[in-house]
Image (cartoon, rainbow, N blue to C red; front, side, top):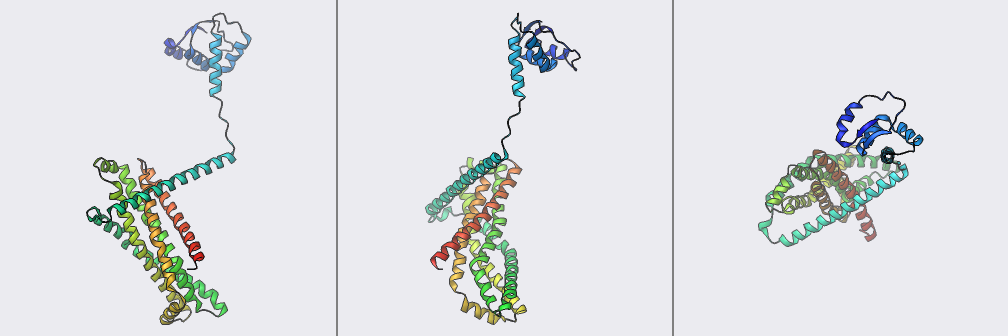
Length: 353
């Protein structure tokens, strides 16, 4: 090796050392000038092992080049050292911590939007000019009326299944008439509202997220902000109000269809006429169970709408992000529905309702 190994001659040196090295020994004593770029090219061409052996057996550095080559050699070898892979146990703990942190920030953001919605409603409740009636009625139709067929069918079938299972078990004790109580109690208090809320969470929350997320990808939200429009007033409030009205109505429909499904099974399997079914239902099931079940619907509606809108605003500028946040909104909504139902159940049990 000889000549000048510097950045000024880098292109010529790189062209001259193309191809595999065919030598067995090297001599660096004839190099006149060298810098870090030349040293890196020299190590790449000759090989780190040969350079290290040469520096070990030739400690004399008359021109002062060997110290630079040694420093570059150490830097190259250090950069090739693979980082230590943490143990799987710490990976799981790290992922758990990141999940809890994301969950915490998501709940804070949800509470923040809830506060903004309440503040807006209190400030504009007596200002009819600010009401978005057209948008609210549109979302009421899409989230409410268009969901009636699937909700009616699903609750009817579940009511029939509950009645069939109750009849199968209770007939062994000779108390088939209690099937009416089972269907009435379960649907008025729990099944109707939770089935409707889960269906709405999968149907409406995903739609809210996809709609707002697509607007963000297409930069429509930026255009609305630039025009001075309130995103809360235009996009969030109509959706929240529409679902706040629609979910209790859908819950009542779910209760009726569930009872009809149970009535059909009782009539076919147990020879209980619709008249006897209704008389037994009225005498054994208190109307308080109806109000307990119905009281859950507005709370669940607000939470579902909030989650759907919040996840929509969190979408980034890509189609993949829209899909990810749509999935996240459905999962969060269903989780919150089940959690709220459990809280309501414990509270009502402690209150004796």
